[in-house]
Structure formats: C-alpha cells, structure tokens
Image (cartoon, rainbow over all chains, first blue to last red; front, side, top):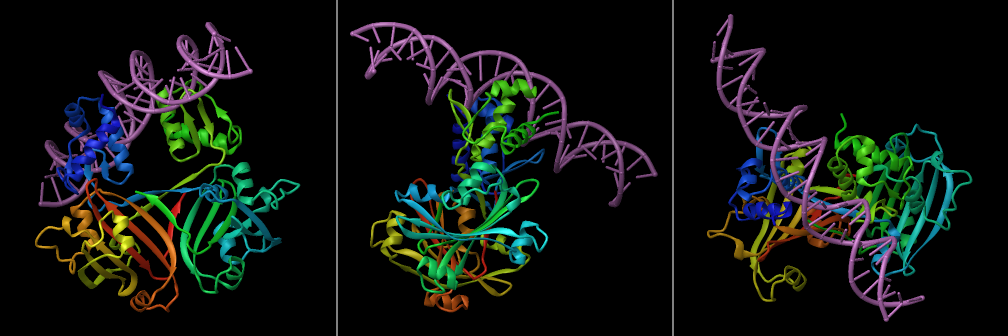
Length: 227
Length: 227
DNA sequence: GGGTCTAATATGTATGCACATAATAACCCT
DNA sequence: AGGGTTATTATGTGCATACATATTAGACCC
C-alpha cells in the first residue's frame, strides 16, 4: 500500500501547497508515522531523502523544518567522453597530439600536492565526434602509478585506462568559461578568443595524486541536468 | 561497533584495492552481512549508497557488481545568488535595470510550453558583489502566478521572492560558455566577445511554467564540486 | 534446438523494537 | 539573575523478520 516514496510525495505536496511553509517546523517522524499508518522507519526514509535533496533541514531534538532558502542540489552525471559522444549517436575517435615527460607548471604541481621539480607525463589529446573536434584534453599524469611497460595511450584513451585500472578515486570538478588560447583555437578550429566551456578535474587516491585534466570543449557544448 | 558507513568504507576499499574488479560481481548482501557480523539491512544501506553514487550496479536476482564504466555522479549545490556572494564574505546588492511586459522570443516561450503571443514579465537585473558586477540576470516570469499587487522586485530579488513563495518546483539547469553580447558586455564592464559562464534555469510546477532565467557571470566565475 | 512456463534467488522495502546521539529545555545551586 | 548540570526529546541507526518484486536459470514440452 503505502511505501516511503508515497510518503515523500505527500510531504512534498504539502510543502508545495504551502501547508508547511518555508522555515516552519513539520510534525515529528512519530506523529507522521501514526498519521500515515506506517512505521517510523518508513517516514524516516522519506524525510531523509528530502533532506538529502535540500528540501528539508533536520536536526536531532530540534526536529525537521522546511528549508527557508533551499540550496538546490543538482546531480550531474560525469560519463567518460566516449560514452558521452556515443550517447548522442556519434562516433568517438581521438588523436594523441603530444606525449612527453616534463615538469608541470607550478599551479598544477601544487594543486596535485607534488613538490616542484618532479616530472609528470603530459598528454595532449583531441577528441572527435564524427570526425569533428569535440574537446581538447590536456592531462598531467603521475607516472608513478603507471605500470611498466607503460600503457599505449595512442590506442586506449588515458581516461579509459584510468577508470579501468585505478578505479574509484576521489577528486573534484570545476567548470569555467575561458577565451580560446592560440593552441586551443588552432586545434579546435575556432577563432582565438572564442568562448570555450572548460572542465577541470583533479583526482587522487588516499595515498597519491593521480591526474589533472583540463578539457576545452568546442563551442555549443552544454552541461545539463534535471533538478 | 560497525555502522553502515564502515561497511561502505570497507567495500570501497576493496574496490579500490581491486579485490573486486570493475564489472565483477560481489558477494550477496547476506554473505556480506555474515562476514561483517551485521544485519542485512546495514549492508543494504551501504551498498545502496554506493549504487546511488554510481560505484555499484545492482539488479534484483542478478546481484551487485562493480560498475565497469562508472558514470560518476557529482552533486552541485545551487544556492541563491545572495548566499553565494555572502559565502565569499562579500556584500550582495542588485539593480533592476528593466521591468516590462512583453512577448518572449519563440525559443523561450516554447521551452516554457506556452503558446506564442502570451506576454510575460521580463526583468533584467544586475547582481553586484562588493559593488562590482557579479552576474547579469535576464528573467522571463509567468505573470499568472504573481499575486496582485505585484511584488516589488526592486527591493526583493525575483529569485528570492520565488523561493519563498513558490517553493519546491521542478526544473532543469544548463551550463554553457558564450561570448559576451553588446548589452552583457556593457553591463558587466567587459569587452564584447569575452568568454562568459552562462547558467540557464527553467522551473515549473506540475500545472504551469514559472520562470526562465539566464545568468551571465562575470569572468572568473567557477562552479566547483567534490566527487 | 527453440520456445514457454516455473521455481529459485538477490535485492527492495516494511515493521517493531531497541538504543545511541545531539541539542534543547528544565532545573538547581550559588 | 547567572552559570553549569541534568533530563528530555527528535532524529539516527541497528537488528531480526517478513514479504514483495524483478530477473534469471532451469525444467519442460514440442
């Protein structure tokens, strides 16, 4: 009959209907359990879910209240590029434009938590969708985590090698907009200064930093999500 | 004492340690419950959480396996602009530059699901952080949801009026990069063509569309999140 | 071999209970 | 009053059990 999703829906309905106004306190789990005729655990599941979504604020003893200034939480899916392109019905290919060992610029080294002077593997890759430039990837890769012999990144993209072999690391992602530099403009085939959507990712394991990636997307790129 | 977060941590550790490889099946909830000496519900909570994060894939009867090509899920917080600015220790202010009723351009009307010809409230607002341009907001607002007399958007930003009075609607958010147009350039004080970070939001209730907002952020703006 | 039905199975969820924990409210003593 | 201790309370979590549900693997038949 009534599952926790029904309870969640009913609570949401009351909030939307302004039966329970922003900032106001709502009944306790126990009261709601009695009212809906379900166990407290079921109400708990529903309210916890709404709290995770930012709709409710819960504190022990203080009770549960409707968020006054809701910090909306949007969930983004971050697929690997190949999947992203194939999901649009296009064909993914890529070219490794550069592959050398060199010292990273100071900001990159410090963000990775590495002392200056250490050499990293630097890769420049152009991702293509149906043969047209899709994104220009520049990547710094901690060579200590690589096996010997080194994987052949000409045939398997570094990203996919990593997700398959250094699974489940933590990291952060940032999005910005930047004007295309000379190199980016040339590679992507856009005018210098064109507005590019930039994604920067840094990943590390508990022990050591893994990689820093910067993706410059061709114009028209869009990150979208439902709330 | 083992809680569900300890179980989750241990499962994650095994995945990272490649005890359980990408694509491989892991033991059943019951087996894990026995191994860890906890109830199945506790294991379930841990595995469910990892599945929501995209680390595990679960199907009834088929069991639980480590995601082969993990579609990482990143959660973004979307605060109201005032909070965002105040969180940086700056002072928020805003100026309403334009406020009229007019027909929206066709793409806006169609995305809101409105027939052409309907007039909407159009607002142009400049948000300032410590007096400096932070974001230029253009908003189309369904006037049918507004009370009479109309709220004074000169003193309370439309966004905050909405979150306080039309709480908890669904919607979508998109991020793009675009070159500054003439008006945006003038208002934000940047050269025409400068790369701007754009967020577009559309919100609606079950019954009716509410608003379409486009925010053009001043250069340097960054959306960031942990994974 | 191929198609259909059936039983087995792992996850999904509900319940009632218990106790832990955090935060507030009440109390007491000076 | 004021300040610190204690009791109260709502949420957080765990457990054992039960049943629901989706999906698969196997049985069965043609």
